[in-house]
Amino acid sequence: MKFRPLHDRVVVRRLEAEEKTAGGIIIPDTAKEKPQQGEVIAVGPGGRDESGKLIPLDVKAGDRVLFGKWSGTEVKIDGEELLIMKESDIMGVLDETAAKKKAA
Image 1 (cartoon, helix red, strand yellow):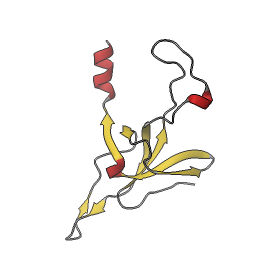
Image 2 (tube, rainbow, N blue to C red):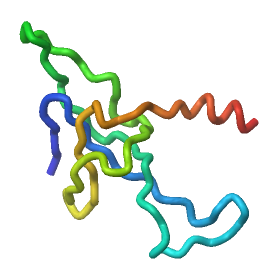
Image 3 (cartoon, rainbow, N blue to C red):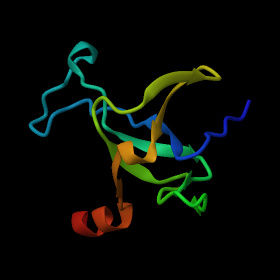
Image 4 (cartoon, rainbow, N blue to C red):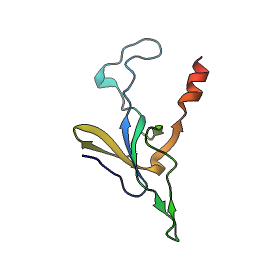
């Protein structure tokens, strides 16, 4: 089954939480917080302004995004846990090329 979000909604898959802290301490599953990063799976066509003109979304499928701790609605589609949220719940897009250059 394919799912297509409507209007300015976005479907996001949470990225897995880190298993260790920066100091090397292993975090048990019960103490882990839900990650606030995810990958955009699908996007709606966009919202409309007062005149009815379609405003496309700034994010696209494949983008890695950062969102608020309580953002979105958790749903299960084809056995996979996903989040559906409005584009306004997304705080920003993580640029992987800049992160790779910084690490090198």
